[in-house]
Length: 471
Image (tube, rainbow, N blue to C red):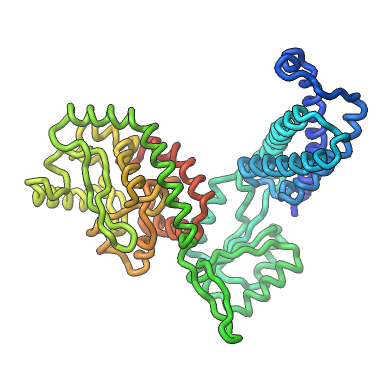
């Protein structure tokens, strides 16, 4: 563990304590503001000295709760928004404990206003102080290299190359690749550690035998080196262990989206797609009028897609192509449109694999170029979500001709409902190759949670309406 991380983590405790005390004093002072007294007259009076002594005794309770909530994580690269949520939750727990204590022993303290004001102010003060402290810590990380973790990568493959690129491009992560080797030979690792120093080892090499892996784990434990590995194959799967007449059985779980998970996700989809339809309705009305004025043909383009378990459905989109080029059974020039699209895919597609993405598509209308550029064309899919053929979050729905090119393992994408947005859309959108998109969607399928859906939806607000590339 880095000395700078230990310093900042230790320094965090007195800072939190000071902010809690300061927030309590501020709450006491606010109570005496004349305008506040007019709104809510004092029912109880007590001396500041008595109040301050109570504060000094109660403040450590909050520190203990913060510690149990993991708010003294030593790493410099912790997520600030997660930390903010934890501060709010931990402070709320402290508030509940205080309320219960006052209920049991009312003569100790009786100002509900001060308690509620202190709860709010503690959250604000602690979060703000932590924000400033984290800014200082990350500045030292980026500009002075203080607290950077020196990482040795073991293995040379596509997954490890991605990890290497991420570390090199994102200094805020707090890592530095000091070397990359093919195998886990301890002699070589010892030389690298002596010459360059190693704080962490990341392994991704399936050819390494169990004996070598065990020796490496022992070496890391003895030398205080963090050992991590990138799982491959079944190692990425979720599983449950059970017993059958004394024999252990391991059940591979495809997704948490079973039972109550599926019910919760459907409820989430109905509520927030309805809210989305209401909010987006002015933009949808304006777009519909613009499409009608700009070109002949239907406003909504119904594109047949494949959903969960291979079910066919129509995904709704605002039409952004000239009507004669739409791939639809209602198009009298369908064969010509298919042949022209095939030619464009061969000459102008910017994606590899079963999916295509045509750059500078000449079939678009003037309005179509704009609405696809900013993803406005996808707003009608909120109705797909509301009526149940799609979800707000999930793998993108693909056409039957695309799915025919899937490898067998790609069909895991069809085990849950397709989504308006997903891991791929917030991580690169159309810039991703299909195989990379598949890996992100598979991670989502195996690790679904309601919190993950909320995070993706929030990130989509920026990514979905941001300008698309490669169009």
